[in-house]
Image (cartoon, rainbow, N blue to C red; front, side):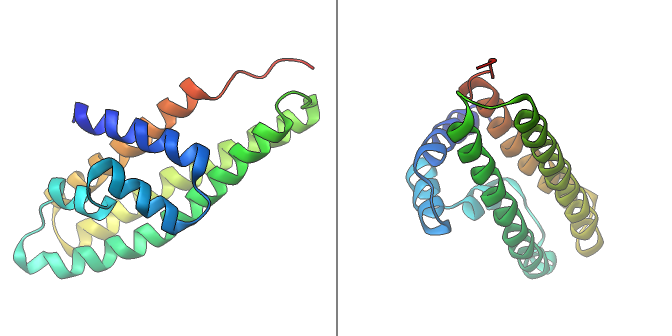
Length: 154
């Protein structure tokens, strides 16, 4: 798992600076992991042969929604970078509320899909899904906290 933190941190730094589209996100993931995110998840989540097709169909659905939230995260980071030196109290409040809302949406998405994965598989597979997705998300959040400078009054 520790190797995943380092890889995800490198991926995040690269994606923070350069990601403009899903294609670039995929390219960066492949460069960091030598494979795409789905392959990383496949290395960790182990549905049975009977559960496999249903799991991956559901996972692809989840990834579509997660990527949409990821685009929102990138836009909020761009907004922060653009306004960082001149952000007013009101702008900071609006931006922070958007970040908190996005965090809730992301957490709720993982929770919703935990339930869906459990319904088509079992508690072990659902827990594996929950663990790896939270692991990746937590690594990204930690890297954000480490890399994004604290806001100061202009």
